[in-house]
Image (cartoon, rainbow, N blue to C red; front, top):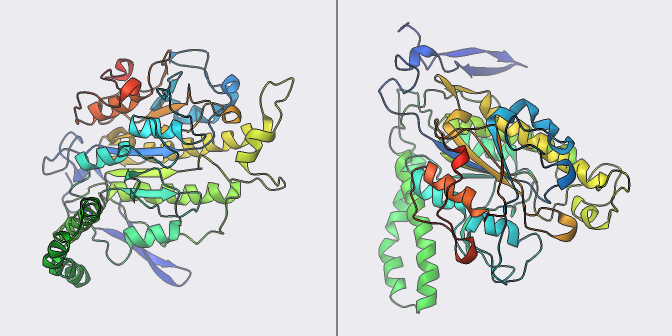
Amino acid sequence: MNTSISRRRLLRGTLGGCAISVGVPFLDCFLDGHGEALADGSPVPTRFGTWFWGLGMNKKIFVPKKTGPDFDLPEEIESLKPVQKHLNLFTNYRVLTDGRTNFCHTTGWIGLRCGTAPRTRGDLPKPSLDVLVSDAIGNGTRFRSLELAATGGIRDSYSFRSGDAINPPMNSATKFYQRVFGAEFQDPNNPNFKPDPRVMVRKSVLSAVKDQRDDLMKTLGTSDKARLDQYYTAIRELEGRLELQLQKPAPAEACVLPGAAPKELAEGEFAEVVKERHKAMTDLLVLAVACNQTRVINMVYSMSFANTVRTGFPQTHHLITHEEIEDHELGYQVQNSWYLRRAMEAWAYFVGAFANYREGNATLLDRMLIYAHSDQEYAKVHSIDGIPMFTAGTANGKLKTGLHIDGQGEPGTRVGYTVQKVLGMNPSSWGTDSMETNKEVSEILA
């Protein structure tokens, strides 16, 4: 091993008159002898992510005819070819409502994220799957989870503990850069650690109001106590995050610091702007995960009521799904499919970005499990049976990939249940009523 090379070495220079520094990538000399663990013997952690796109698919040109390995790629998903070996595609799984209303563009994704159908349009009946995961694996990092919305919308999130505790997304790559890699970022590989005094002040301020908040709780009724307790739980989590920032972070051997912040993009949901915003956010997310800033990530490419627009076409994607007539010869909505193909291109980029980043003897994607899904099967009629789902990554070798699985009408919660089992959470079951399951998708288990 070449011990003269430090993982702190930077390549320094100037660009446009400004000083820049570029981190040295993850080298073999930073690892154990097998490239399978950190130099101190610690295992490389498993991370989890979600990726969401709205308005489903056109079944005729989306669902492969072949199941198992080496499945065909119909034209609506042909852009997945470069990353097909890293994916599993799940089709023909159902969201069961047990007689409740199918709230358009809502019931489907809530069923897959919560394991149960909502009773009202605004009902978020259980914590979302990613929150359950972050409770299990999200401790010990600066951010319990990171949420991003390529839509640019400040409310576009599918991550929540309840209807009163929705995790707000970052809607700008520039602001995301500043939040994660700005002044409060502590390089995990910097041997010269010094706590940030601003963090110390904020933690002391939060701790100082403890007695007052305890006194306030004594004066409230049951419902107000429950709501305030939820609020204070969030405060306690923030205190925990701040406490971590006062300690030297564990080394993150694959961490390479980004250069300058990406430029701020135009507002709005024009397809090309969404594409570039998603790309910039993805590139930063890769580095945030590699630098151990979080172990749970959530990306929204487009909302269930997608307002994405195409230059030269006045209608949004959502309106098109309802108003466009199917092409008589092709048998599907041509304009709707144009948007869905762009979504699949973005999904391929997201998967590829993690698959192309090395971490030891594997890639960052090999250390991850990413779960992707939509809100509908066919948006024109709001069907929720057969909502397409994907997983990407092997979760540190626990999953097979490259498979198409036909769910044969089973509850879609089987995928979410499998996610939890693979991540070591070991629930006895997941979901409620007809959506409850204790069956893993055994075909993908390594």
